Image (cartoon, rainbow, N blue to C red):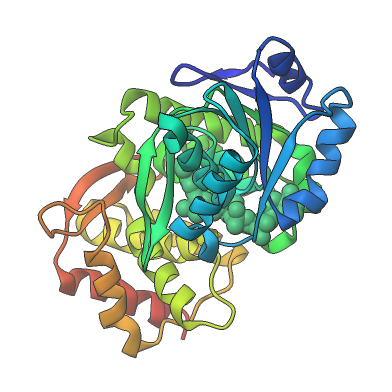
Length: 354
Ligand SMILES: NC(=O)c1ccc[n+]([C@@H]2O[C@H](COP(=O)([O-])OP(=O)(O)OC[C@H]3O[C@@H](n4cnc5c(N)ncnc54)[C@H](O)[C@@H]3O)[C@@H](O)[C@H]2O)c1
């Protein structure tokens, strides 16, 4: 597959990571570090060792897995490890993991000694189709996701579908929600194609096309001033419910599960306020509901969910902004809605699933 050219770097699609070996052969780094979490150390490092037998001189920085650890304390741990292992400005950090690792590793690298090179080797479906391009790095603070971060481009990204073999089905499904979003906002034919397959049979070609869609958008608008906001479809409500769930549920929603819910609510808002037809609304709801189980939004949780939405860093002057569809495959942005209209979509979702 031809590499996708992004903002000054390439995204390589290559199951056996030969391109990564070539990249390392052609570079002259003083030290190479892998940032992993416990799961990617167990499941993904062995593949690195298998595919890149010549790469034997590296240090591993391992953190605990999970969104709850994408924070400044763990980031200090990464910086401290880099210092302890004598990482200089000519060192390379390879982020081997899901979006938590690629986001936090990208942030740690972009700030350590005013910035060292890093590359991304995303190992979840979500991070391959979404976090792989766009240059966003970051960590969470308190309840607010990704509130501290930078726009910094990696030196390269290497995507291998082989990593997905050890991912559980729930994680695959979660990543699939972002793929569905790509179809909904930008490519109706792709959306129709997705309806023919199951998330677990996702192919490299599908991952490739999703990265193409996202890449086209982020190249046009690297700093999210305009069209990049369409990538937030489903996320205004999805993020708020995800944050609520992380704080309150014993088994919190995964990002893609919250996004699936958010896409239903925001498809409803698209129908109410942005011209999406009733037929397409029904088509979207039926498809998403055929993949994702419903989530019970307790009515007592609405004030908290609204507060999380108000804190979203994508808001302007306190107004809550949405990206809404006009039809499947076309999306507008900068649509500001009143609290009552937003609450109405939560009630719609609740009634749909009662
Ligand atoms: N920078 C961006 O543009 C961007 C885009 C989308 C999402 N994100 C961020 O990505 C994060 C979510 O990413 P995620 O869903 O990948 O979560 P994650 O990184 O927490 O990974 C999910 C789980 O899968 C495990 N795992 C990872 N790869 C594995 C593998 N190959 N086999 C077995 N287990 C594996 C991880 O250890 C973790 O337990 C969020 O923090 C989100 O903000 C960033």
